[in-house]
Image (cartoon, rainbow, N blue to C red; front, side, top):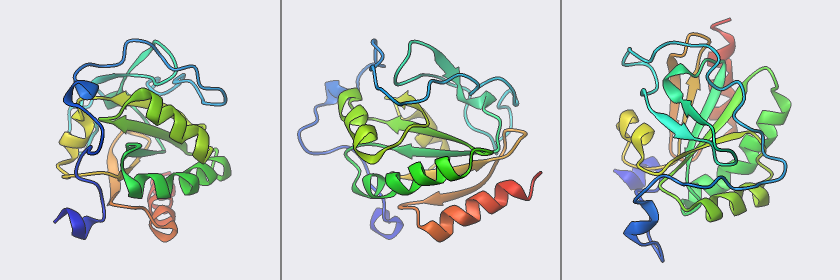
Length: 184
């Protein structure tokens, strides 16, 4: 089924289990990356099944933690990892879309990855929107999807209103953005 989804099932290669054993302790200093300010200013308490799970995740580049269940949109939330080929391919498109659509908050959730590898990929692909770190894949598990990437559309009330499983195409991204504009 993972092949049909076009996504990655999990980390492989030269990664060891201890790479994913604990949340990051030190934030990565990454020039040009937005901080997490404003990610949890509004929104729900995450008590509905159509919402992101109630879990506090650290920001990639600062010591602050964010409760993702309180994320209010309109937002595009992309779950990704540096070891995931389809994730790597879609990131430049997401970076461009974030710059073209300032009315939509773009948020990345780096999943089961090494911080240094994640930071390197963000630099290579020009991604500058806020990034959270989910070492334990809590958000991915909540989506009930077996692999990465996963891209979610979150409306102003914090509900997940649409999602794409696997590598995101430009037409699928346009559909996600349209689903957010319909809720205004």
